[in-house]
Amino acid sequence: MYRQIALNCFRYLDFKSFAEVDRLTMPEYKLLMKAVRLREIDKDYRNHLQAFLNFSVKAEKKVGKNKSKPVYKRFTNFYNYEKEVEKVLPDKKKQSRFSGIGKLLKK
Image (cartoon, rainbow, N blue to C red):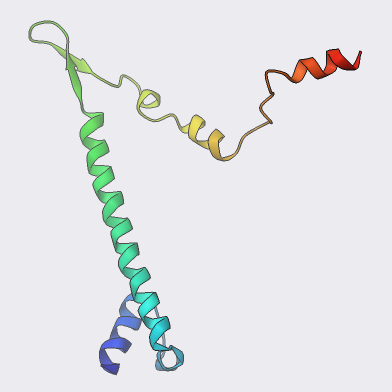
C-alpha cells in the first residue's frame, strides 16, 4: 500500500522525495487524490467544451436553395472578449439611472 501511495504522490502530486510522502497523513493523501481526480474532470470538461465550440463555430445556416452562410461572420460575434473582461474588471462604476436626481435635489 505504501508503495502505491508513494507512486501516486510522485506521479500526480509532484512530490520529489520520500520524506514528503512520509509527512503526509492518510486524510491529507485522500483529499489530495480527490483533488487530482477533480482536476482531471476539469480538464475533460475543457476538452469537451473546446470540441463543442469547434463544432458550433463551423455552424452554417441555409440561405436560399443550395447555399449556406456561417452563423458567426466574425469572431466577436461568437465570443466578445472585451465584454467578458469587463465583467471581471469593470472600468468605472456603473451610474445609476437615478444618479442625476441627487444633484437636482441638492440645488
